[in-house]
Image (cartoon, rainbow, N blue to C red; front, top):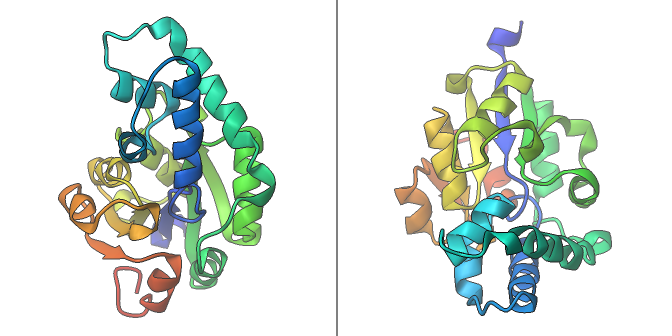
Length: 221
């Protein structure tokens, strides 16, 4: 019966696949090509926002919005060069397979779609464990709005109180908290523990391998 199920919802970039810094470099170069000098540390803290929101966050509301589409397209093209070699984070595939075996419904909640999502799934290499994918294309508002997580719960057929959300950014923690699910943070995306905890993380782990090793006594027990 679906009501007895449990769902584990995962962000992908920086949580299961080691892509955050690749995104940073691609965004930095896309901004540079459009004539904007945006520091990489600022880009890093914005990664995880949908493209349009990320540009607005970094350039401000008074920017020339006519450049937005070109900057996003530049990032997409630059980042696409890495699709054949995206590195999974330690334990990513093993964690999803273990949760699947333990009866969890595993859903990915990501702003990636199309070829990018395909490349991420190939990197994780655990398709048999993934029940569904909630893409940013399926919702009106991306993280930190709760919609991506709520959509993932709908796909899993599981209420918020029977779900956990695993992510690596403050946007993930805010989205999960607003959706009413317990949030687990991972440090492998490069965001500090204190920032994740302040944004709603109930527990913080180093990476998927650390979370896997702690399954029997953590929030996923």
